[in-house]
Length: 135
Image 1 (cartoon, rainbow, N blue to C red):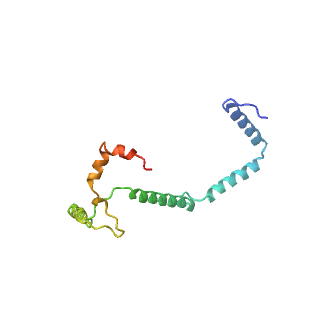
Image 2 (image 1 turned 180 degrees about the vertical axis):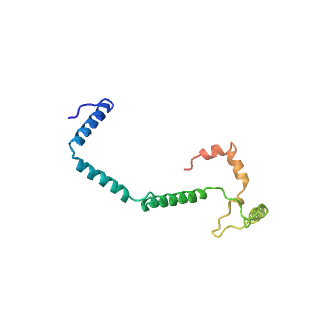
Image 3 (image 1 turned 90 degrees about the vertical axis):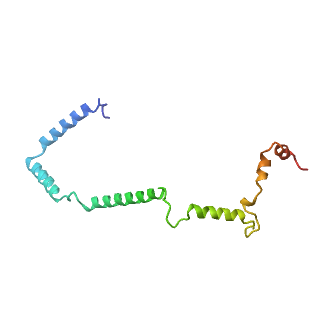
């Protein structure tokens, strides 16, 4: 079992001591071979602009473009020149109010209902009538 360490200070000291002891046992020829191998691997390492880096940059750019495209969908839209103006919208509502014909199913439109019905429903007479039960 490993002894408990106080903030890893003693552990670090012990690791450094063991490393120095191990280096003292390695021959100078082996150290030279390890040093040469380390330098050779650094020379053969890929440059900082490796294809892997470009893959990450491409994926990040694609994600950013997708996020901007989705964000643009929630922006408020400005009215187009081809959109109907307020005058044509008012005339369409007026025409619908004057049109007393029912739709293709024979159901009158909501604008054809009598507004007095809603006044009667808000009155005090409607409450007792609504509470009556029919046999």
